[in-house]
Length: 333
Image 1 (cartoon, rainbow, N blue to C red):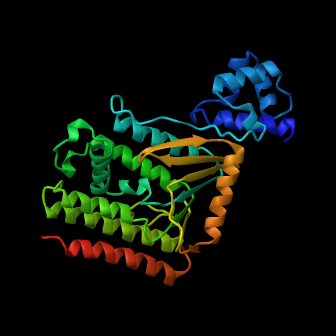
Image 2 (image 1 turned 135 degrees about the vertical axis):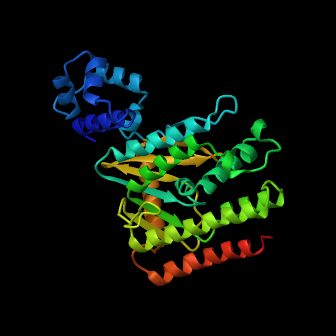
Image 3 (image 1 turned 180 degrees about the vertical axis):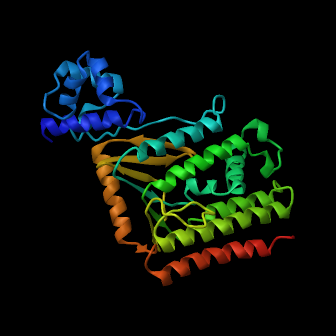
């Protein structure tokens, strides 16, 4: 990597850490105590950074120079935060997710890969029932928040302000062209969680379970329609106005892992899912190239079922729909 290219990559990394409203040139000018024009010259690679300037920038933005120079030292740097029961607020978590998606949408060219171990998190926000269920399940069962001990799941308990954020998250995701790789088990975790709560009598009645399965059914119809059209659109939009391009793949043999890869104006970012609700992010060039190659191999070994392959698409959606139907039929309603 040449000096000019390295500098441009450095400033792309800085941009990825700033909000969409922040000017990188003004930030750098203030940090290095230079003019904005001089900052732009450095950003374009016309004027080399001095060692002192590089040190200040790396220290201020917590950037790894060996990663920027693509030095193979066998280590990868990630960033992220853990859910802490003492300080965690679900609203902040959702706003963080919203900011990440808005950041991705700030780029002209963007593409988002998702390896679906289970239903992608964004799709829980199409319907209030699904959003309420996932919120309750995470906080009660995964994290054992004491205020959820002994509580029954009531959809009406889900805060309106949270669902408003959910809708914004979904809207932002719909704008991003995405490649989702699914398998026959991608819906199994959600269905098992619903059955687990029914067996444990967390629902007030089978009527609520049926209501939740109805939401899953409608979501599945919506995803099938998006797949047939090859693009995402807002649920309930009678005109089905296209938003982000939607490529859906079916893989027969390999389970997903919920890992994600964003490509933003050529820059790659990997999001690694861990411990249920947490994820960590890396800008490491070597790691992201490996992740990109992994997704390309997955795509090659999968069948594209969006916009084409109507027979394969219909079969995939029919099998999952039959699983949902069997669960609905077993309810006492």
